[in-house]
Length: 252
Image (tube, rainbow, N blue to C red; front, side, top):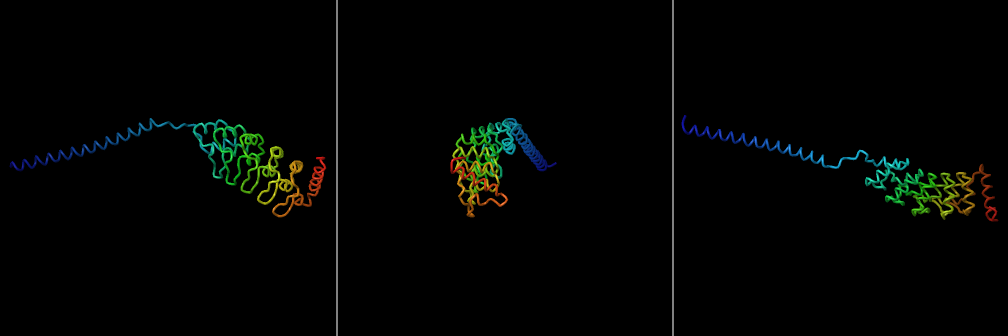
């Protein structure tokens, strides 16, 4: 073999070894990178705070407030949950607890920063929901914490309107002794007395009249409470007039 051919074969062999070595190094480096990435991921997984299996989802928290499940409510709040979180209707845990008369949960939510004036999509506040549910204990807690009982929703309904429409006479009586505006009008010009008469809530009608409700106030249609009584409710109308007369002479 000629010397020149020998040298060429030697150089070719060196290049091949060098190429194989580079490929092996690259492959090894890739493998090392993969191993390193896997190790880092494993370390991250091991060092990350484990997920608490008792974490409370928002829906469960809101439902717990409605059902009076204090332990679930407390867990959510202790884990840093927002007490003012709401559903698609902007109804909060405070609204739900007030509606269902869970006074202790109302207190807990307020202690943790729940907004007592938070409005839902109809501008109803917790006091509206308490009156809707006939939740006297919850209502008293809200009042003790500074809730305004003369607030209005989008239809200009006051808590007195709401309690009257839902027929909760004990709540109506409490509101009347708490200084609520007895003659407040809603967007149709109706007072609580208009609502009570229209719905034939006799006991509430009596409470309102004896507390000084103005029977002559006319609504947007120009109708006073006594004038909207239907013919078949004549006895109710007669009773209203007698109550008014008794009040005027101080007998009621």
